[in-house]
Length: 225
Image 1 (cartoon, rainbow, N blue to C red):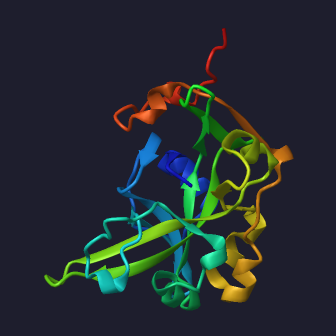
Image 2 (image 1 turned 60 degrees about the horizontal axis):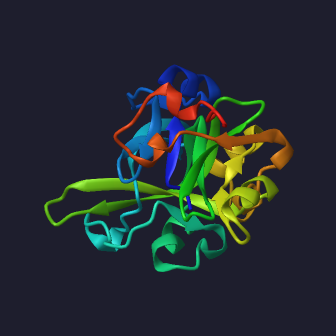
């Protein structure tokens, strides 16, 4: 499950993804939680564009009203097989979520959820795979929303979260264009657990557990002892 992530600064995000059209404005955030409006990259009329969307999928049939049991992520194995994913998946409504890292939790023997920051060794900004949809309310208000796709966890994340856990689908740079513009069959090939040898994870402050905290100290390693 993807509950929280780190949003890079706009200038760093644009340097990494180079969207051709930029309809967004945002600042860095060290504790993004859902549901809120955040930046994503998608393809539109043959060009890539950066837009703001709601994190938390609102299907068209929901008429602009979020489901009571909404989730921040979506299981890779169910893509195109559920009512809320079938149409956007077949219509190639895929997006990339820019992040600087994300948080996972380990349940300790004392039943305490210890947060960890997870990032990449060679990249301070990277993209998570997602898909988006559009819903219109009875008052003609339009909500464009997205969800983050998860895949089976690699060994690094599984050691923290436990057997059978999942992690967000991290895209390789070479797969950005494939994910946004190719057919569903080719895009599916870009989804896999990122190599753990290219990742880093460490304990961070439990302040992360509260969305009211948002500062760089949240991603600093927790001092032991």
